[in-house]
Amino acid sequence: MPSDQSGANGFSESSDLPKAAACPDGASYELRISAGSKARYWQDVWEYRELLFTLAGRDLSVRYKQTVLGVAWAVLQPLTAVALMTFVFGKLVGLKPDQGTSYAAMVMAGMLPWQLFANVLTSCGQSMVSNANLISKVYFPRVVVPLAALSVALVDFLVMAALFVPILLWQGASLGWGWLLLPLLTLLAALAALGPALLITALNVKYRDFRFLVPFMIQMGMYLSPVAYSSSLVRDKLGPAAAHLYALNPLVPVIDGFRWALGSGSPPPWSEVAVSCAVVAALLGVGLAYFRKVERQFADVV
Image 1 (tube, rainbow, N blue to C red):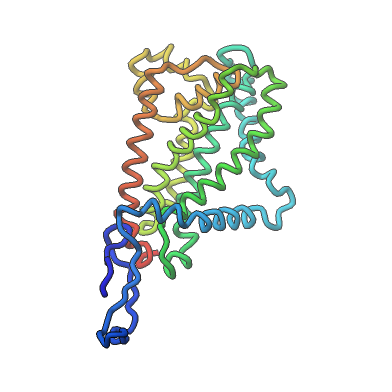
Image 2: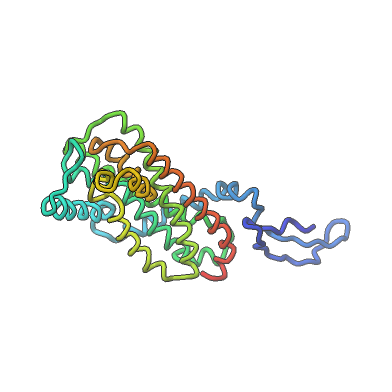
């Protein structure tokens, strides 16, 4: 009795068992183990959620295994970057925050979503290659691997926020109703990173140049995003039209939103938020579509 041979992407990941096995009525049959149909792909992802949690837990334990500082490494790099930016741009260049808090608090509020974006891009981009042995041996929805890397990046973000938020409060951040929007802003930052990350991790399986390209992209992206400066500088110097073009970088309204929610900046214009959401949706759609298209080849190429 042949079963559906189409896999999760319309391909077959099947294993033929002996074809001449006997049925009670004496007829022969052929059994194929299939990866599932397109219609149930996300159902398969949900059914493999325990694998996702296992991979995320393993990555967390490996990341901080045999380290002296442990999870403190999750905040050491961004905290060092904040200190350097405060000295160079705040003290030497003389940049000022929009309102209320200190320049260091402004940079710290912007560093939170940026570091989440950078961590997702880095960890997801290498996730398929890092799990080559698993991918080449068993079937599971391949998107589970980058989603596990995303989960690890979110844990790092929570650790960093647990340290940064008390410092921000000490620096004058306010506890307004904007804090209620922080989970939505965090989700938007994670989705903004997930789309490009899916594209990069799929390309990295075949073209290993991306392991060198991604750190360069992150380094350039920090200066193209308003982490060390306020996006109001762009609006004041280049005008509203250029500001909307600048908002094509989906992290611009996210960073502005974090600063506003933490009492260290003005709220982002809703028109720029709409542009950012549209870009995030487009990047997520493109990344997921390409990942689904080529994931059938991962086991052969990786």
